[in-house]
Length: 275
Image (tube, rainbow, N blue to C red; front, side):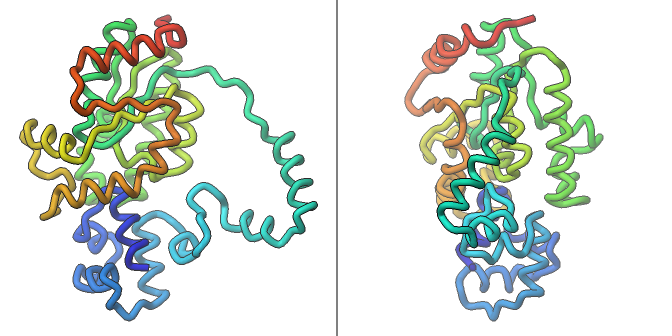
């Protein structure tokens, strides 16, 4: 359970202090929980799950409920193999995805991967608008991201984040969109992004992530963390499965901006056109 809580914190980019503030569980208890020495109770886990904006079942279950509804998993697991195949046929025919008009290209990944620099240059070459989802979020909320978390926690931020993404989609014109690194932890919002955009995981080595963030004057790759490189490795490990759902991967380690931009333009210029 301690490993699971620590992993969820990493996926969401939350410090232990932030989780404590929004769950009402002391930092000392959380530290003991993550190290495996806490006497865990369901009431405490319920508070932690609520702070993560997930159900208690999702937190404590050994099943992977990241992408599936818990009740659906339990129902299907009780069926015979033959009935499961029949259920799959019904679901496939009922919910087969239709071709959806794409709203442009979305760049996702951790800070320091090069999303902003590469995204703005790709947008220029493709003749598209460059949009940073964080700026849309702050515009809707009329406050900074930090203030949103302080006042409303994960739930409030994720609601505004999804609203901001829908706002970009409603522009009804293709854009190059940069999204925050933790968006992938909110499955509904991430699925919407994957449906409506050509998605690109912009990645780099942990060492380059850290070096670039520090060179930008930001000394908190994960706010409040003492072991920045270790935290970055943990976040990358925890989010790799989510990031890998993107349709394309761009590794920027040891490469120039021009190389990376040329690769994306060459890959997507035939698919994305300005109105």
